[in-house]
Amino acid sequence: MSRSNTRAVLRSILDRYPTLYRSMQMGVLNYSAAARFIQKEVEDMLRREVELNTLVATLVRMSRASESMPVIDMRRVFEGSRVAVTTGISQIEIRCSPDERRKILSRLARMNLSDTEHLSVHQFSQHVRILCSSRDAALIQKRLGRTLPLVVRHDCATVNIKIHNLSEDDTTSIAVITDLLNRNDINILASYSVQNDILLVLKEEDVARAIDTLRVATK
Image (cartoon, rainbow, N blue to C red):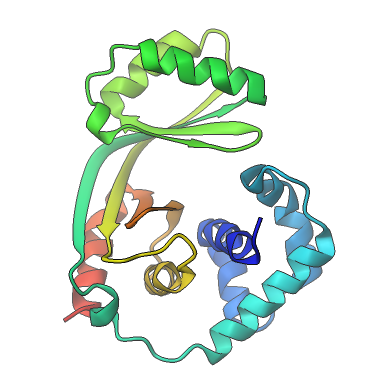
């Protein structure tokens, strides 16, 4: 797994912990304590063990990079991009082993879900995260909740940003967008980069403010 992938995972986790993120930006983060706090989550997302010293070093590099990062023109980041917002989304997290994960995916494929357009499944070493419509979430809960531990969060929304020529290891574009939203107190529940898309999961109540923030920044 490349250093850029480790950095991207750390970036995604920090987006969900604004206090850690802001402490890093201000240069007051206790790197060792932060690394211990997020180590298990990093290993889960990378699907391998990660040494504590590696996380500390990566956090330090990210902090220094943010201090020296030049001012980036948001209009260039969003040039030719398309933004799509979907509300009424639920996020389902299922703790499972790799063997259980295969069975879960097979059971999902056999379900008669009504809104597959907004269905996405994100796999990690010890859990699966499903984004779907609230209606489909009810069906998934009914079918899987009897035998599996589910954590369900309703009232979510997704912001899908399609950026021209976004590469898998392009953490700059993602960082610019998440930095902007974090600075405006918009909490990102999860973020994913898939091909040319950046997918952000937000609280539904924050979506309008997030879109306004992005619109103002790109004028």
